[in-house]
Length: 257
Image (cartoon, rainbow, N blue to C red; front, side, top):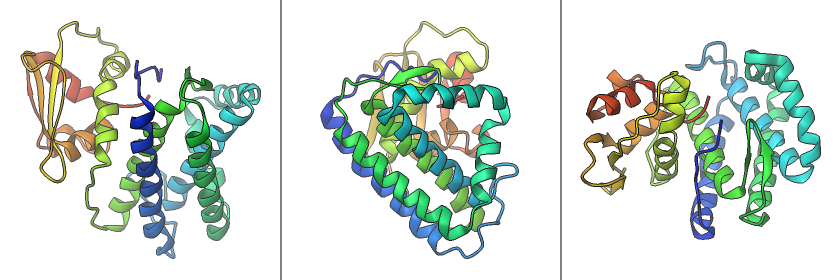
């Protein structure tokens, strides 16, 4: 389910890895200053503690997949047994830990993940949910998830979040997730090419796809990322679509199942 067909170079991983570290540090600075982690976030039933617990649990699973891939079978079996409520149960378990303990665990885990992904050969595969991944793809995926759950926390406390160039990694996953979006909506994947043109935080132009594509998506990179990560409804963004398939994509956009 996470096979985006992505081929990233070592240079691109090197660019994304500092972004992953910075994304975690930014969220850390916010939550460390929040005395009450029981504040509800936009995710139904999830508090700030749930968000941090989810990120910590995911980091722990990444380390299992990389260091002891044979043990990841148990993680998959536990996930299958828990069913659709797996993430909720995992987050709730972590959220029940003392705030200081959870914060320390998340900090240690994300630091270990950054080192593990940095040192892993680019072509070395390891198991993940529904597919096999490499560090080249896991780095931007961890960045994206940290950013997305971080957005929930920023929204919960009403804090202003300045968009950064790190969004380019999230936007790239959003573009690559087009097939997943149609799959999740149980719709056939259009064969026609798409063009995506986004405006970055500092006015940069980020584009994917042939310039003459009839199916087109345009707007701010921030809004595209918020939509693809399912943090905003389409109507709350500045995104525009030219073509029926492009519109359908935006209506069902997602990066993960």
